[in-house]
Image (cartoon, rainbow, N blue to C red):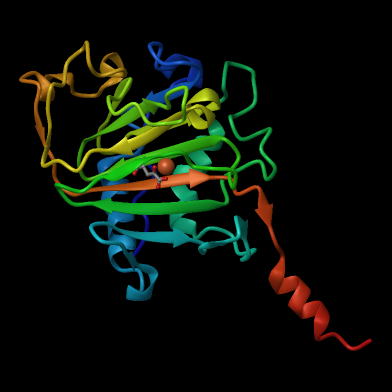
Amino acid sequence: MDPPPSQAIRLPASLDDCRIASLPPSAYYIADFISEEEEQFILRKIETAPKARWRQLTHRRLQTWPSDLVKNTLLDSQPLPEWLEQPVVSRLLSIPLSEGKPNIFEPSPHGRPNHVLINEYPPNTGIMPHKDGSAYYPVVCTVSLGSSICLNLYKSKEDGALDPEPVWRILQEPRSLLITTADLYTEYLHGIDALSEDVNLSEQTVANWHLLRSPSLYQDGRYERQTRTSLTFRDVLKVSKLGNKLGGMFKRP
Ligand SMILES: O=C(O)CCC(=O)C(=O)O
Ligand SMILES: [Fe+2]
């Protein structure tokens, strides 16, 4: 299965050009981050991965690449497979934060994402509001495939309880990239409602409305979900070179 030829995707000159202005710093949304051919290619790779790659939760299933974390640590020093590096990681690293500035992963420990979580959401499936925790550098890059879906952002109340009404909603279209960082990583929770359709979609209720590829699709305020697959690219802070250590243990003195 060969990757599709690199398409003429026109990326923004910098992330500044696609910042979601109505959110606290900083979140970025690029509607056309990959082509339809690239979307299909990645979906095929996920589908044809060995069955043992899938972890089945009650409603959702997921894959982790190159492997699961153990105590917040990436034990496997293997690189990501080529189909996750190209085109997504290379494109992520090619966009400067502002013109003339480095990319968003430049200050991260490994200078690039080293881990990808793949989540599959059939209609009526979501993910409970949560924070991503301390295992990762606080930059989250999410590529969406197959369907649009709404991500909700929540604020915790003073007493730590969750305010059940989301403060913002971000609509993620298929082939889009969403990047969330900083306060959105540390102070807010994110989640997806388990719905068959997203409702009440409008310029007033969707934070990234002006950055959408096809706002006219949501003109009546509703979107009936198909299966949406997300790829979450992050830099795991702790990487243990277990393989090398084991190699060392078996060396002759
Ligand atoms: O699928 C998504 O967009 C969110 C996934 C997520 O929040 C997570 O796996 O931590
Ligand atoms: Fe998350």
